[in-house]
Length: 286
Image (tube, rainbow, N blue to C red; front, side, top):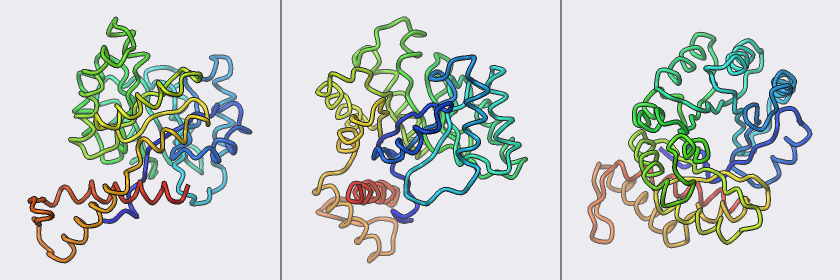
């Protein structure tokens, strides 16, 4: 295990599928993930056009620049969502990852994964927890398939279903449950974007609170938010130094348990330490 095989997911930004010229700009935003949008950000009459243009973005291999490319398809229980998945299955140059919205049960995620298996695709998956059923089944959804890299928390849709205000306090239980599910599965958990572009202080506060709660990243709706989000989810120098100390201790001991600074540390913690180094290295490269 090393930092080389851990993908930092501190920030993501959407770019509309029907405006492919924005894709290149999004890749220079500093976000760890650039998500091509086919769902809510695309009007119903533009869905087919967005799908076709999305496929052209992946017609040629992309440079390995450390930025994760992903496509948010439409809900798989809709005609548009089924068309999105079918197009990805049939193209000769499939997308590297898909984001599945409005997931209600692990079977939905597992079904997509099995389709990718059948077609021999390496496409990865992320799933959005934004329905009452999805929140209830979050733990099982997180365990649905080894292809699943992250859970995303969709506060806007979920607040509407819960009939509550979309505030930190009102959504704390839902956020915590999503973090618990992702952490138990050993995958990333990414918080909803901050929607008020004029309230940078509010966004920084919420990003800090999200990181403290256990989220590994947060979405952005504008490039100007990305740097602050990346900072909130990047480890400080003390955390990096401690991670290196723990990794060195395990390498020297070659056992499942070590003692660092008087504290007993077990092997599962090692992945967290490598994740800290991966985020730190990405912050240095940015």
